Length: 327
Image (cartoon, rainbow, N blue to C red; front, side, top):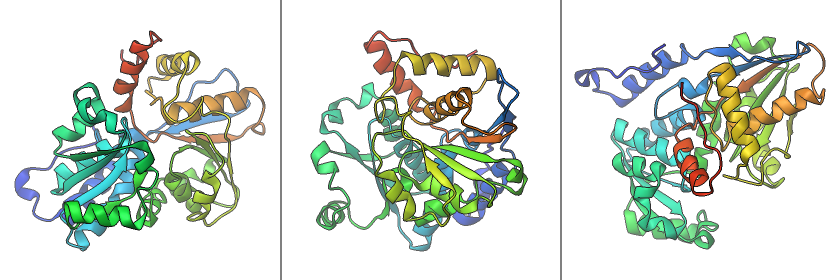
């Protein structure tokens, strides 16, 4: 199934018209697949948001949708954002900038990466899309949103439209409120991975009273609840914190084996940073009878498959099993 199609160059006369056309086209094509289970007590389906776009996939497409429109409406020519070494957001923003006529600047966590771009598939891809990098220390990165830091960036780079780390702001949440459709009334639970809280906030805002949202953080800490409450307008949600596998970007052989087995059984690739941890958690909760009998569970695949290439380089260096999602 082809889910994305470039329009001839001569048609690209208006950003908003073309972008909205592409949005309408791809969103009509997103499949929901049933997952093979060893039990019939519950049923599980996965929304293939990873198939929205080959490079702006999953929740990144949703988060950037209204941010890009807002940047255009403000007549901004440059997008500036933040991210780490294997950031799906950095890769997606770089491609979106190239595709829709923005200059892009990535403020990258870790100044040691400055001379290692060629060793990092995510950064190499973003650079090939035209993104300009500024590498900063991890300590400086912790203060990236402080006013004096942003003022310094404006002095260095000139005027820009700021897209927050992970893309999360009110425009991102608005985009993620469109993930669920009227057909999803059948589901009792909606599950998604959590990074910066934008995706789950949008889903929470769009669910119905009989539904509950379960969020599975990809990083340690309970602080995400406060971030989510900044945007979430309902209370029927829960954060389940025990499936982060040690923290952001951390994996082990058990998770890699799960990713490969899940692909072998369902032909659905999972990214190791976010979606795989969420799916692993849901399957474990099913085995522990967390869900009431006959529950219908919808998993949201938030994309990010591009990050598996970089993860495999780390796994190879540690002589661990590799992610294998190829036939």
